[in-house]
Image 1: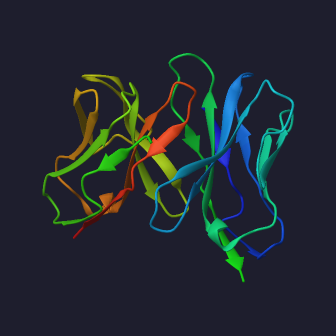
Image 2: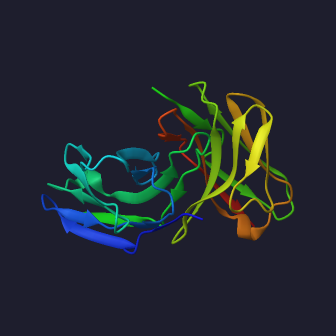
Length: 116
Length: 111
């Protein structure tokens, strides 16, 4: 079974600085998707960024980028120029690419605090 | 915008009560999910449904059942609530490219 591990229960960063959240996963599949989701306090979870395993280029969305290391099964999220609105729980998730396999497996989450 | 709506944000129930959590999505998604979120455990899949009247157990189905009579609606049922089912429950539907859209969550307290 696939597993996703986030080893940092909590992280904090000064506003405007850069922070990296870690995620590792375990799978025997070669084709899959990886995601980072953000859950702000008392608000809905939303997708931050997504990576397809067959793509070597790291995904980027504005201030958010990933470092995808397929051989190491590592998928970290870098947030540049941190803003107060980035404070949230962040979840890493994995999904097989196979048709019909729509289930996502989530990590334990990392709570990110932004210090003004 | 995709919308996933959960019927109740906060519920307080007593042990042994039957609890219904309802979820409606407006994007005609075939696949819908119920997750449970607990501190330190992340999101754990309870049940999912890939079509009307079709369901499949997730990782922690014990003590729960589901109903999907219409494509847009996916209900989670606790037949006899217990204190260890106190949790945040998240409903989601999924697009064809794998993006999950979540509801706001239902925080259930069982006394």
